[in-house]
Amino acid sequence: MATTELDNLSPYVKVVAGRQTQGAFSETGSVQSALDFEAFGNNYRYAEVGLSAALGDLATVNSSFDTTRTRKFGVAGAWDLTDEMAIEAKFDRTMERDMPSLNEYYVGLSMNF
Image 1 (tube, helix red, strand yellow):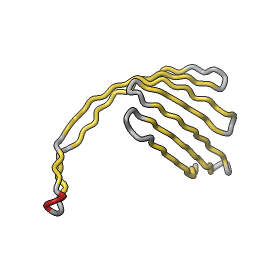
Image 2: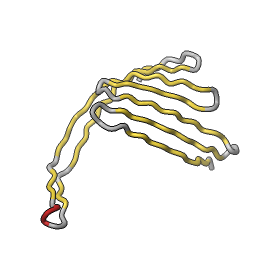
Image 3: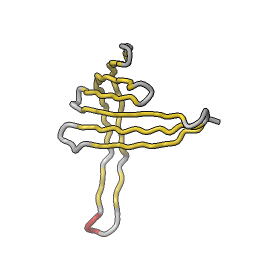
Image 4: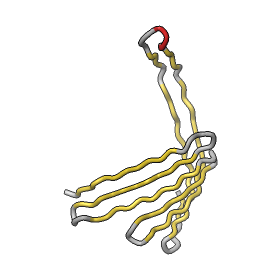
């Protein structure tokens, strides 16, 4: 991944490659609901261009677009409670072509021992 820092802005470009696989399986139950799924394997590769902006110590905002026409937007932050504990929060929205939008929320407590 290539990045460059421009004060609080960080543009980036990356290439993602991977493989998705699924083994064959059957869902059983009643005769009316039995389903068979075949095994498959798909390779994928796409490029992503994005921009991340730090909002001081408050949060980081990021946005990206990739060659599969997926747009992503997110806000994340971490706030120290003590030297050993911090609260983390994140919101991500993914908008894919021909698919409903996906919203993800995360709130957590991190502790250093």
